[in-house]
Length: 420
Image: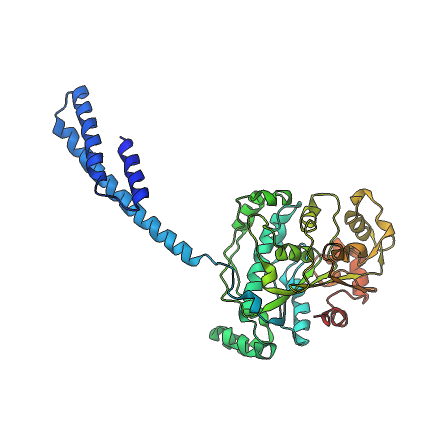
């Protein structure tokens, strides 16, 4: 009884429709089956033949309906899948606008003040719109493709509204939904002051996070092209209008390098360098070290990236936090980032309290055209301003509370943003 169905499906796929010639074939096969049943069970032939003929006809019609549906779905998918080519990418102008990529286990809320400072300095800036818990699937040195999806989403949406800087405020107002603008006016806010409103939210639920935690592969597996695609619903941006800058803090810095890579990461090439003209990394660990947490860093360091005409690069590192006198977190973090890992001696290094200075500037080894900037007495993060900072890094939080600056303080931003 299955053979007619298989025959129908084969004819149907090859011809992209149920060809009339399939009907007599099916009926003939069913007729033979009917006669065999009649001989075996001693039943009248018409009692067997009629249901089988009806079944064969219904089978053919059913496959025709299924084929029509699948063909329609295939056509729809082809229309909706973004090509990510973006038209004439080479002719896109460089725009003095930026996307901030938060560091490990941090989120948008931690960098809104930095973005606001950059906006006040005349550089429209947005933060990748993600909370802290979106990092969970990447714990344990696993694939950072979930982060790459968020970076790509943000870059493309900002690039799609990026025109000449003098027109940015006009573009922002025209791009905002009128009801949203009215509600902001009622709250006493100017919509054009916050480019973040130009970046739509994406859908990512706790269930999505749970499934990503279960299925996200290890960072050492990304070259084998795993089939797992990160969960979440990311709206497609319109055609890019300009190239923007990336500002990556801590782990966000080397992840930006993966976004700019020409290689596939987990079956996907993000072609980030087509939409980015400059990269600034702030306290990012660029040097390879032992342990699965550095598998991603090792992956980006396999590629020599020396095409300054495509993407300029600046590695920024802070000093003033000696590994032997800045608390246990600093000592262990320095050892963690160095060639011997946690078995090494973190007290011999200097840095920003989390990343030793040689690692912060280490991008130069793999991106030879990159420039470097050392900031004296500058810390890694605004520890005393975030929930749990004093518990996680008591010494560093105390230093910050006493007034020692970090990369995101206004007078420190002025030292590295002038490079843009």
